[in-house]
Amino acid sequence: MTPSRAITPWLISPVPERRFSWTDDGELALSLQISKSGEPIAVASLRLTVTEAEHLHAGLCHALAGQRPPWDAPDCRQPSQGPVVRWP
Image 1 (tube, rainbow, N blue to C red):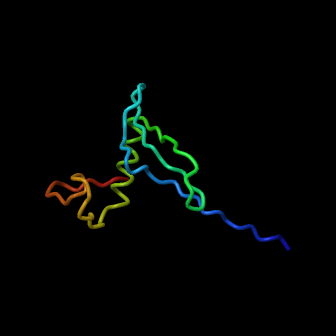
Image 2: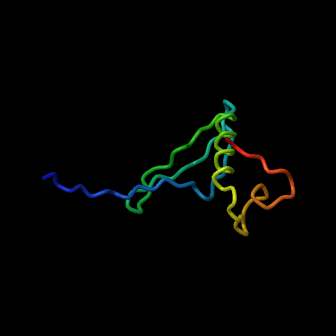
Image 3: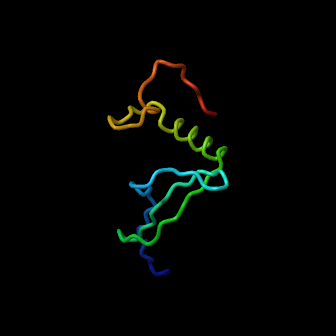
């Protein structure tokens, strides 16, 4: 019988007080806090090219399709009267 291993809860989340920023080489950077069992371990940057950011944006829009935006959502998530664009 194999001994059971405890799974340590890791969490990676955006750092609320930091927004996307541009790097010197033209990429977007998002600061992410890495926590283990509720204790902050490190802050790391997710760096994306413009193309990667566009793909992430499209994927998130597709995943959120049909969901009502929360009251505090940014303007891009507020209902619009424009055409619906489908992502593959």
